[in-house]
Amino acid sequence: MAPKLAVLGLLCSAALAVPAAAQAASTLQKINDSGKIVLSYRESSVPLSYLEAAGKPVGMAVDISKAVAEAVKRKLNKPNLKVEWVSVTSANRIPLLSNGTTDLECGSTTNNSARGKEVDFAINHFYTGTRLLVKKSSGIKNYADLKGKTIAITTGTTNQQVVRKYSADQGLDIQIDSAKDHADAFLLVQADRVAAFAMDDVLLFGLIANAKSPADFEVVGDALQVEPYACMLRKNDPEFKQLVDATIGDMMKSGAFEQAYNRWFMGPIPPRNTALNLPMAAELKKNLSELSDKPAQ
Image: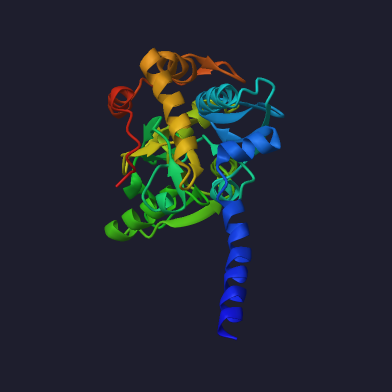
């Protein structure tokens, strides 16, 4: 009986290993087999990834995604490879990437060690910090002015943890109203339902630039931390990470990245043709040569 049981055990082990092997298929193999690459975008992460019009994502991170798609076409020798776009939120961007719904997420995602347990990150393409979007008429200038007040923060972002810790450390008793996405949080400020919207400063400037009355709002407060943004890809896929890193690295070394930055951060952007006028941060300038994927501390 022992030999038969041993054989049966081997057969069962082999059967269980098939799904695991299937799940371990590389992103490039998945794309090759399906005939398409699925790229995700954010609807209101101006000017990195947002909708200019229905079904038309634009922004600097969208440009990076498109460059990766072109590199994949060349790698697989499939010039007619289909490119599909899927909208994601802060809450579902990691699950949809991990389960294979999307193949790459380039938007406004902070590269940190906690997320690094679930996904891998490409070379950092932006650096930002948590500040406050408020109405100019509110009189709010910094976090101390929010003592006992309610603010909005987008669900699933690192900003929630940062603000909660700062509030507790400073005894500010700041209450948080979680919003589905950045545009929803901005609406809460506009409707006077919250005192401020705490988020990465670049996204706040972008929202104001595209508002109907941009002069009514301002970004205030100290930056609580400096965090890098980077594109996400599935965990433990070195071949695809190498391709994504090479694409971004080539953009940074050739000057194409700086051209894209100037287009989206210094010049007029759609849909209102308003310029953010945000010069490149020192951390990002440094990373044009270092090409680091180091996470936030």
